[in-house]
Image (cartoon, rainbow, N blue to C red; front, top):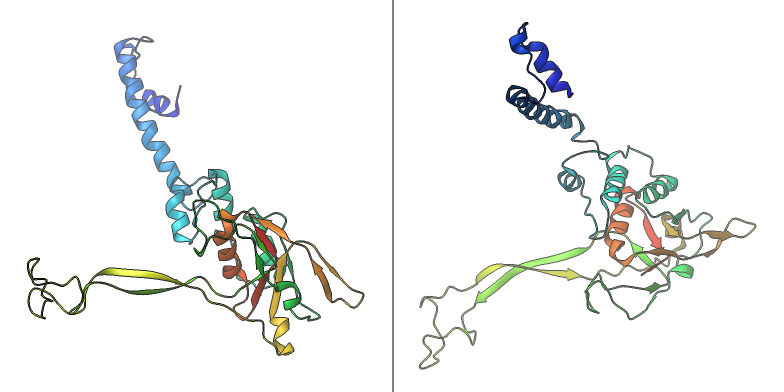
Length: 273
């Protein structure tokens, strides 16, 4: 017997008239009333967990609030785990172990964060070369079409885009004709408006960052990759590659940008594939 039915029975007056026989119409009526009340009760109970990533019934809304964009292949359990890593972050000093912890909480289990101290030239690890392959419906040349990368990349800011008006008609354009008969170019004021546009067109800006030649800036570049080795003096000598699924590249970068210190650059040593 559900809690709602027990409460309903307790609220009925005393007497045999109010005690229905099991399975008769009156009993079924009370069951229906109780089930309806139980559904409302359970929905109200969920209000207490709207902001709990483990059980929230509005997972997509909560992801949107914290800027978490789930990948197409992520399971619900993975989405909830990754949301938790963002939601329960606390103010911190920007320590590198915090970033490593957040990356692992998001499912990047084999990722290490290495401080460049004592400082070495980051270009030792960041010389780039790309395999010319593409996947996930992308085409070579698109910003996300990197299925395998050898070397490293600098993660400094988020992706940059330019938004410009998408012009539909401009005076003097070959498509701006007075009529189809004489193909006379239209003049301003003849049904056309100079600068008329239909929405905006977003263009990806391929920002290229160079490692500073001044060694004084090198300590501000840290590394994210696989396990590393250091010499007897503590200088980094090797950083192994870590494997990042290509479909999670944007998510991986967003976590880095959210938790890294603002003044620092991240040298990512990984293979997207």
